[in-house]
Length: 314
Image (tube, rainbow, N blue to C red; front, side):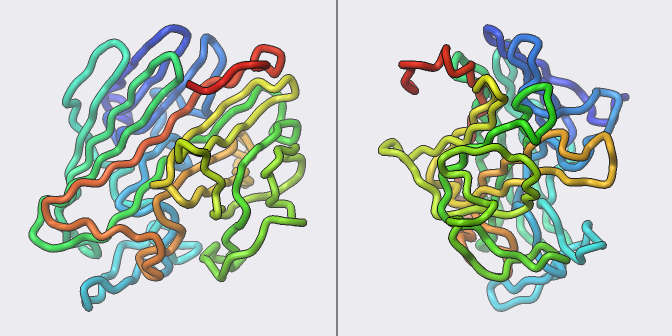
């Protein structure tokens, strides 16, 4: 038995992806032979949340403690060095395959009442390949009798090309970033990116920048969509698209002590709420009994600049 359970391979044109039974994790995504994300092998357990679904909250909850409906709740601490509850409750759950064909797979799970989260929330995720890339659609429905707090994101590490991250470029149309306590990475406020190492609005080299911050005040286009673009020197790379339902996006240059993970991929995580939202309430969704909410993200190959000239997004 593999550490991440059954492997669901899907294909369309030059795209190929593998999603796992454990966590409904995106283990790999390729355009031809070119990897678009930093994945992991089928004989390994998911490392550093590569490709994970983050729900019912993304990022951190300080001390794992929050109040909801006037009642205190204590979540398990799974990031002990920062005393935080990190990245939700579903990354290690077994998900059931509901539907599958050559180009798509649908998986589901249920978050049952447990210490710190006494709610019943069903999740369903669809991974679908098409000419415009891989679209990930996550739905959550409250199957209990009381309102539940909810937020979500995904956690792919994008790979622009074979050269080191220092040579990659990032374009991210976000005007503000969330300032954090450097020890625990919990929010302390918000600041303009202007004049800082966090200003990627016009696209620039990542170089030696160290980023592990959420961004907001995102510029959405007339279709209410936003694109982030991570590219190599020839302009080829990976585009990530999402809509206004994700008003924050976390970016992490993956500066880690382990050589095999250090700056191997750029994590871009569009989120429905900022870090510590269970405590601050900012951006936090109240999922009413019987209600369903949905979020989506798209990952696609970005061709070299000379091939993109004159193209428009469909």
